[in-house]
Image 1 (tube, rainbow, N blue to C red):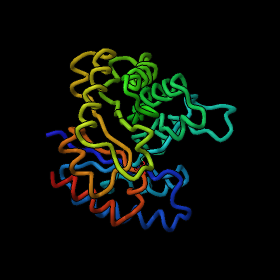
Image 2: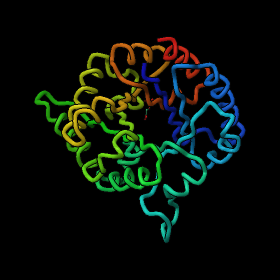
Image 3: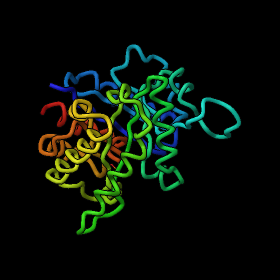
Length: 252
Ligand code: PGA
């Protein structure tokens, strides 16, 4: 059975290093007990080196929340893929809707994905429609997003890619998308991947769901939604809730 993967996107939380350490310690202690679930934590950049200090002993995989596509140079405020790799980061979220809202286009996202793959980091590529309509236009929106972000990616890198389907209307919302719809959308994402990379790459692709995931709905989303894992926002910095969520996922 494929190992499930739960990724915590802490976003711009928490405000202090002390609190960040507390949440991380709790998550790490739990993650060490799971045999069927990989746990990835994506904290703000400033906490990365603290969490990576004793990486070899940690059962938690450390990811970042974004990257810039150039290697180095006059890009004030940016951080490159080689820098993250040097630190020991193995996973990076790209194309999150909150970054897209700040200007990341599919073209920029495509460059970011490539820069990560070239240094051996797993990109966690977020895709998702803003809204739904009755004519299925949202499917075209999603298809174009995926194609435009991946059409310059060599097929040999396809197995490193992690896709996260996160419709904007579910992010930060009260309720997640229902599992049946998640299942349909994950098949759709695989179909688009198959057109880009080929059948085998699409079948083995890792597809996650994100948007209003919590300890109550996590198990059902994986079991009925047929996804390989979850991208979790708010619940990932709520220690008690995240603990329950991880237990629910690992017991499937
Ligand atoms: P949420 O965020 O779990 O708080 O809805 C998900 C995300 O933005 O990845």
